[in-house]
View (tube, rainbow, N blue to C red):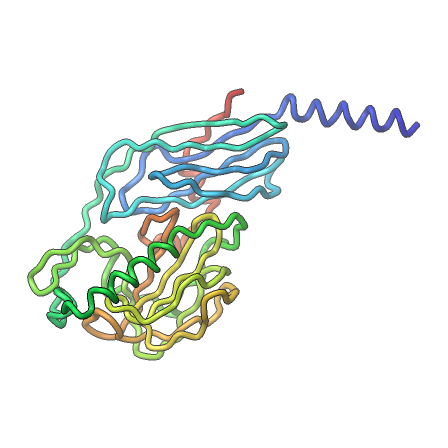
Length: 301
């Protein structure tokens, strides 16, 4: 009897793998600077899902979803260094010992972001030579942190707003003009906040970098898995340290006016697969709603 049950189980398992159907979902057209959702779904188990976009491979995890398994991802493009055009996206996973690949193309459309003229301390536009080594060291530490890639998804949508009241004072993508000198587009959103306002973690995650940096002032970076990183700048107080695990909605810092600023506020950045994207639209949507804006394609053998 046991032998018959074993044979039947083996046949069912083999049949499931043989006739598994898998799909990928991604938008075929999107705006530069904006976040979008992708997914891999299948009627059978698979392992090692990943997606390559903008020369960065993002590891995803596998979860129960729908009639089988699913892997979620959040991606985007950085307004500072991405031009409108057509870009490749590649999905990969292993199923039944076989590696599957599915590729596609996404047209990134131009989005108009206005200019913003600001007057700041001249040293923040052209820092003195004595600060250059510090700035280079901080830049290296930030670049290393942004390469963090963990598989476990600790982010859920919509995120917790980082402040209880969201009033924007400077939008993502504004081209900053400091003291008449044009700079690249703003890589986050500035939110009105008095000194000492509590800053909340948008997602659960692990703190990967903190410090008081020359340009960004008090800074906190949190990794939430699958290439999703959030960052806060110009903080007056930091309540966490590198390596701390934080929960969604936990107080991680207090807002301030440190670094290159014109007054107290909170700078909030969302980094997806190494790309700084507009963090505000995600506050009012979900991964499920975002995926409905994409196109689903079946993965061929």
